[in-house]
Structures are given as structure tokens and as C-alpha cells.
Length: 395
Image (cartoon, rainbow, N blue to C red; front, top):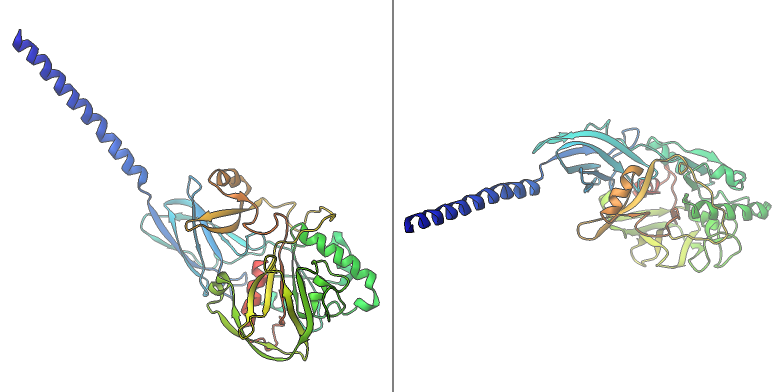
């Protein structure tokens, strides 16, 4: 009887050991497999649409099958290396928030291998519809064309027609284009209202030097603060036509712009006897991108904080037909980036913490860029030309 009892105990003990061993083994294997992510790399060089200019500061990214983002940026020479999970992926290349310039590439990533993308694949495509108003001194259209992109010339009469300008995503205002103000102030009052509506609904504009008058009022230029006209509140910006000619040492004041350019100091030629000088601005409203080194005066500013009450709600440019949505994604280190992604991805990204809309500014506002310096491609503007390329691609 005693032997039989010991035999039963031995069998139970053996059974317990066997059961414990069978449970542990697959769990360990499963957990190890779940935490192992096989990755490879993609390398390339972001180029303008005509393949002649490298594009620095471009966002390059993809997602895994659980919608985790893999992200990098191109350097000043347009070069990038993106680590990505193994498999077939869509690679996105964008500037700005991706709503105006972007490219998509299908690529197969292999474990521990680097896939070199051809420059024919990494050209940055123009999605935006771009317009410009011809100026007296500047030709931003020439810089646009050197990048291989296209822009349509419009007039101040076109600016007075909201239906016409709503066709475009971006409008460039060359210095001196407001010169006919005194002959028809009623026309420009309509223009100011239309530009407010355009930006409030997501359109972006760029103005140079004397064309600050479109923003804050005045005729060809502004000679005082709080003048009649314009659409940016007088409390947000004042610029006076009191600058003098000469070479000015400048500093790039934005980390993203510095990365894209590959330098943070430059010399700008203010080549007119008088130019607009920013007297004061609201730092919570405007971001300073370039400043004068010796005085810290703002030379280039931008905002996407514009709001206006009573403006018409109207679709702008490609908005009615686009299948892309701007979202704000937080990277490691609490770095936030605004990107455009296919609409089908939005619910999954939101579930992981992304928010719809840009990371900063008004939820509906487009960008306003203003430079006190000129933008003509043939003029002596030093290395400010590459800054203006950045402006074009990041509106």
C-alpha cells in the first residue's frame, strides 16, 4: 500500500513538471518573436521636379502594418536614409505639410539591405495650383520655373474676383504689384477682403518688400503704422518704408530652415534706395525665420494663425478633390510634425494619438510669408535665393 501511494505521488510530480515545461517554452518563443522587427533602409536624393535642384528639409516617411511611422528628413544636398520595416510600402516625400508638394513611391524593403532609389523616383511633384501677380521689381515666377514648377500670371483685377483666386492654392505677390492702388482704391478694398477669405480658408500667400501693403494697408508701400486697407490686424504687424540700401548680414532663426539650407548666416543685398522695415510684430502670431544679425530686426516672417470673422467659407485650390488630409503626428522626443496622408489612414493614426490639422496655428488658416528683401532670380540677392526656394516649397 505504501509503495502504491509513493508511486502515485511520483506520477503527479512528474506530470506537474511536464505541464510546466510545455507552457513556458512557446510563451518565451512568442514574446521574442513579437519584439523583433526586421528592417532595411532606403536611400535617395530629393530633387525638384525638373531634376536640377536638390531639396533639403523634405519629410520622408512610411508606416508599418500597425501604422507606426518611420520618418527622416533630407539634408541640404537632398540626401536621406530612411530605416523602414521589411515588406512592401508606400514611401512619402513632402515639403511643408505636404498639401502642395509631395511624391509617393512604392518600394520593397528587405532585411538588413539598403535600397537605393533612383532620382527619377524622388522628384518632388507639384500638387498645388500656383498663381503670381507681376511686380515692378521682383520675379518670383523665375525662381519657380528654375525648380521646374509652373505658375499662372494673374492681375489685380483677378484678385478682386474671389471665384478666380479660389482656383489656386498659393498666390505670390511680387514687390510693386500694388502700384495702381491710388487710381482705384475701391478695387483694392475688394482685394483685401478676398485675400482674407482666401487665407482663412487655407490658401497661402507670399509677399515681398513693398507688397506688405496687401497685408497691412497702404498704396505701393506703407509709410506708417495702422494705415487703411490690408487684412492682417494692425496689432499684429507694422512695417515702414524707411530701410536703406546696402548689404545686410543676416541669421537664419529657424532650425528646420537651417537644416534645409545647410547654413545659418547669409548676406542679403537690399538693392533699392528705400525698402520696408518691420517696426514691430506680434511674436505669438508671427515666426521669425531670418533676422538681421546686428539688430535682431525681423527680415522674413511667416504665420498660419490668421483668422477672420464674417468671411465666406469657400473651398480653395485642390481642396475639393484631394484624397489627402493634413495630420499632426508626435515623434519620439515630443517632436511634432504636420504631414499629409491618404484619407484612409486617418482613423488609424488618430487612434495612435495623431490629430487632424496642422500642429500649430489656426485649424483652417493657410500660410502668410513676408520677406523684406527681394526675390528676383537674376538680381544680386546673394544666397537668399535658396531661402526663397524654401519659401516656394513650404507654402
